[in-house]
Amino acid sequence: MVGLRNDKISVTVVTGFLGSGKTTFINSVLRKYPDVQFALVENEFGSVSVDTKLIKGVDASQLFELKQGCICCTITNEYELVLQELAERFPHVEHLLIETTGIADPAGVVRPFFREERLKELYAFNKTICLADALNFGSGRGKDISYKQLAIADEVVVTKSENSSSSEREKFRGMIAELNPLAPVRFAENGVVETFSLQSLPKKIRYFTEPRTGDLHSKVKTHTWTCDRALNKADFTRRISYYLDVYKKEIYRVKGFLCFENEPFEFVFQGVGGNFEISEGESLVEADRSTLVFIGELDGLSIELT
Ligand SMILES: Nc1nc2c(ncn2[C@@H]2O[C@H](COP(=O)(O)OP(=O)(O)OP(=O)(O)O)[C@@H](O)[C@H]2O)c(=O)[nH]1
Image (cartoon, rainbow, N blue to C red; front, top):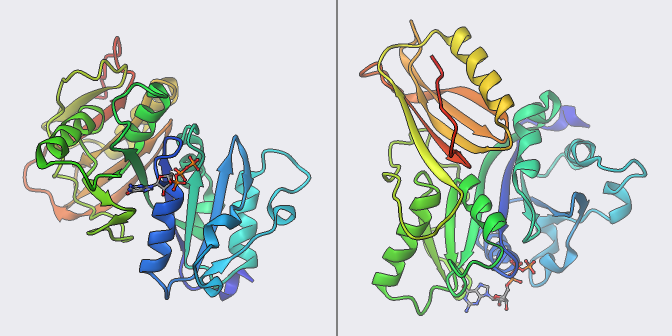
């Protein structure tokens, strides 16, 4: 069956605290892309189930509905097998949307796509989108987990923003940059994000906002590591691999670009919860400067990679 598939399935993870608007957002994505064959998985407290409520009002031909029995096989904790089975049984699926529960740590949902060889063959990880509720953001509700969800995200959507003034929007941007200076921020009004695109973000990540220190009083901190000479690829890979493994609990997210000896193009580094991927980027090396942004509980960590 897998042989029928020409392209990998793109994977987008939608996360965000309880009631932040994940279901609403997913419905708007399904409406926006009526020609894309989606599959939908909801991750719930470590188990996996498909949330059929999501198909309401959406043409069923867009969706491959998986019955619980198909994916929750008798073996427990088989998330990776479920993903594999999904790709193999439904060769027409083009895009997998995974909705995490509001109190889930998304690192466990994302990690298999960076770690498992078979999943890397079947899936192309697209991005993690975190929804933040404008009406509750910064209230401290579920602070640790919702800050971690924001810290890991590639893109943030502030939902329920229809009544937010431009100064309030700026404040949200600042608070989010405090947790995650890498993620572009968009706003949803009445469940619709005007400029949203499912496409992955460009493999150029120079847009990051300078980390800020604000008043969130969060344990989540940001650190920018730089090196001004070309790195030896094998040495660096070994070191970062060791470092991220040792601090996989503390370091939530690492993202950046690297310059390696004898390589004309910059490489993009993507790391989530102890696992990482290094892939050739789109920009030619101009100066031999490598930059990695670390996000996590960094107090007391010294980041030495060379
Ligand atoms: N005003 C407004 N309401 C919204 C918006 N997005 C979602 N909502 C409402 O917020 C409530 C929660 O939305 P859901 O989409 O169910 O949130 P969720 O994150 O899936 O919820 P859980 O699965 O329980 O974590 C619903 O009443 C939505 O109609 C928005 O942009 N504006």
